Image (cartoon, rainbow over all chains, first blue to last red; front, side):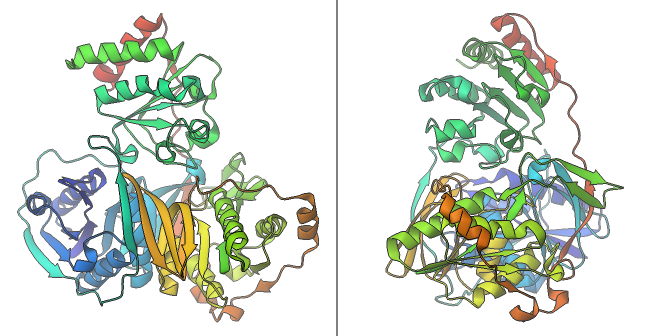
Length: 326
Length: 260
């Protein structure tokens, strides 16, 4: 039977959301009886995660090597490509995280195969497999396929539903990557992580984003509070980042991050095209703006014309009441 | 310090794009600009040269208006340019494009190869890492800070959950993110020089590439069809004072759409 190889990305004690989505897709594919699912994890992982992944896959391959102890694009690319050569999967799937988008193009070169980055829909069972990826900042979608195998597909976080119950009992095998000494030239000197408990913008279910209408950096506190109550992340527009009110990593839009949450709340954002390009595949957009003619309302599901400094705190209070948050 | 920059001319983000026929091709309004992230790469190359000396060469692939990115680069102050100009180079995927570019880079003296983290037309973000792999050198993606010393690059790079500082020996490929620098605006003298400049060209043959290795023929993935994104239905305005609107918004998001 043909196999699908899913690269599973972990962070601390958790499996990254985009990986869980693909593992869930994997279980659905396996049910058709046409494909077997293999999951690959690289480098050190918490032991209980292997067994969690095994609930979704027919086989979990844990690839280890001292050269994989920290992430490097060279090391990860070699290790995954080497393994793919032995197992000859039909597809290699990964969430379109920064990490995957960083090293999987190198895997495509090593395997001389096709890659589709940042995919937002897929027809896995078509022959050939066809995936959809946005281009020109989402103005146009392309349907893309690949003649050969493997076909590497990186899917945007929040594209697939996470399966609620899974009960496979895949075998877990450990594999030594045996990367040649000196083959990894990249050295990690320092890592600054976001404070614990903060949700990554690209995989957040809900994002509360602010623009110039926030008026000052300290006013983002009201967005932080709302985001905290609904377990979301805070985003920002380009002008806000350029004004140094927020960090570059918080920027949503063409020159920042592309996001696809279930809920995007745009507060005090006028709706410049380069911002819209980053939020186009969000499910529901709520726009709050003083100006009834703001362009953002052309893209929003719901709109409130009014003062965000009154509406955001009122929403936070109402949500606290309804969610039972003190 | 020999620096090679890979840059691309792309449709302006305001350009109108229309899908023709049953989705077999696009008609794009003739408004172009240097791809946003490539501007940061160009600027950084010039800054490294200003600090450490050396030469900057810019390479692009494409026909027609593609050459404009090279003229922009000359106006900004780069030393040399090269245009990969042949029909056979056209319409390639990330792989075919990276192969051609890496062959062109391989002919140059290079300590650093800089490019944008992705082109803002195809949005693939594949070419930088692929060129590095074709050349067998390390890369650092999405950099916002760069220091070069003692044959090494130390770069700060944005990752999903924060930022990392990474060291790689040269030669290396570095892909530029917004935040790396503020690109300069070319001076009039530079623009005049750029208009007069002769643009050197290379063909597939010059790079030792057969027509079936590049462009559409050399591509591993193919675009089967262009489709329009789903249109959003019209906005529903929520009326009332701040309290009433906020309460209704929460009700709608929690009880109707269930997105909270």
